[in-house]
Length: 121
Image (tube, rainbow, N blue to C red):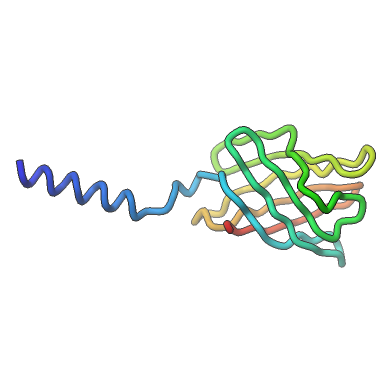
């Protein structure tokens, strides 16, 4: 009985010490975005039911947080849209890196491609 208890405690301790699942996209992500010679920073907050995005230095995109729409999660991928000024929409898709530490993405805003690489905050 004691041996079984020790095995159970060891299993719980090792599970507790591991980070959240590498496939878990939830949380706050931060990093640079690039569009040609222009760049800025992006904060992406992914929640179970959606999330918000905030970008700096992107012409025609609000500096304040914007609620995500058209959210789709599957395995290690996350797709979303966010409304900019007027009829402009930022549409992007991301993929979680093999180690689960980097969220790489590509998107389009106002007809121009945008790339970004985000890390957990």
